[in-house]
Image (cartoon, rainbow, N blue to C red; front, side):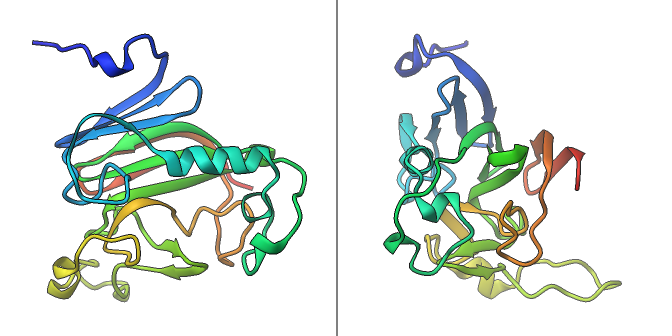
Length: 212
C-alpha cells in the first residue's frame, strides 16, 4: 500500500528518485531531502545513521545561501584562501535534478551562464561518483587501468575502506564530481548544458543539450 510521507505534506515536489533502500526529493524551493538506509552515506548527512523521516541536506542549502551572498569560495575560481576574500557579485547555485542509484545519490546544480555541476555522495566503490574534489585536491577511488584491460574494478583495499568524508571510496557528505567544473579549476572540467540524468544501481547516464 502507498503511504503518505507526512513530513513533506504540503511541499511542492519538483523531482524524486529512489535507490535500493533510500529516497531523495527535490522541492520547488530548491531544497533536497533524503531518508532511508544510510550505511554507505547515501543520505549525504555526514554520517552512516539510518533515517526514517526526510532530512534536509543542509550542505547544499548552505552553498545556495553562500552563492546568493557572493561568497568567493562559491562564486569565483579561487580555491586557496578564498575565505579571506571580500564578497563578490552573487552567483547561481541551484539544484535542478536529483537521482539515486542503489547506494549513491547525485544532484545536478545549475551555475551561471547555464553551466552545470554534478554533486554526489554515498557509495563510490565502482566509481559511480567518479573522481571527487576533496579539500582542493582531486582524488579517484582507484588507479585507472590502461585501455584494453578488464575494466576498473575496485580492489579489496578499496572495498575495505570505511565510509567518510575524507576518502573517495564512500562519501557521507555531498562533494562536487571533479570532471564537471564550470570554472575549469581541475584543468579538465567539462562544461555542459543539462538535459537529463539517470542512475542505475552502480552507474549513471548523463545527456547534455550541447557541449561548448
